[in-house]
Length: 390
Image (cartoon, rainbow, N blue to C red; front, side, top):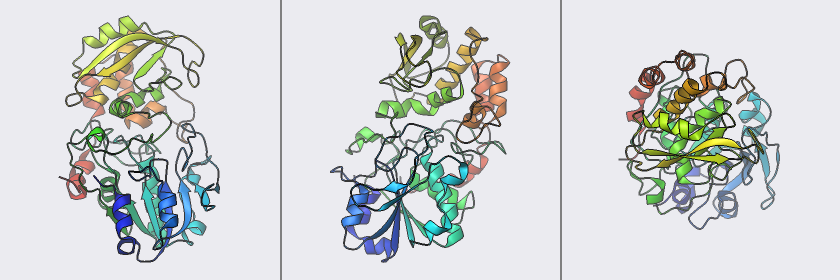
């Protein structure tokens, strides 16, 4: 297995053509020796690295989710770091002044296979800006950690576009970041001057632990592949007053609230058609974020068969069950979420107001799923042309 970064380093002139380079990267942008792309490109005699861009969580750091990151200088190379995650939506894109300093914008970030994960949105906004200002975009591809075959979820209703869902791709999209770039560029009309440096040796059926690559946390609350497996469903809890396990050692695998009875919830969930998953009642006490320092009834998700596990259905099942058991206690998040506070956060995550309404109306899980999995026509039509790997 060789990542796009390692493929680029074999022959930088082929891809960069001697141009001035800007790099969008996070802590996952490493080779198999765990040397960071900033250092590798800065030290390479055939690469003219001029400027660094940091997405949510930062280039080398570990800022928490939805915490703005300021401009700075890289402590190792001294290069200027431009934040692409500040305090407004306008801060999420490179400016004309930044783009005037480079000829090629290189993007190297590990995605986790879920629409909500903001690195794909950062890439898309960079592509839009690069198109406007005549800068080439080069995506250094990495595997989809949860495989490239299982697709789960729905699209995105008009006017619900947001930083955790800019385009109507399913919540589990089964594409690499490089393939998403091709999809955005073609099916969704960005039209940038785009190239993708592919991985060598990745196949669509492969999970990350079959790749022989070191796992570097893509974000502070994505500590393991197990987290990534459940994330396409359990990230939905960010749109509620349920703790999604931030402030515990197993975020997204653990979830709960002070009003939750874990045993009762587990019994209810066991009555749903949820293959490949078991629920263990427990108690959590988050150290930060929701319910910090408070004891919460909780469940831990244990994926027993990842080949049949349905993350998105499981996440929706948790919401349906919690609403049925504690209708007065469960609430939807209405505070600012990824730069929007005009609609409930759950609508941004599902991409549909109808999903929330169906859950509030007490509809069963299959009915909620039918509503939640609509609107993927553009994705379905464009995906095949964007795929790179067998």
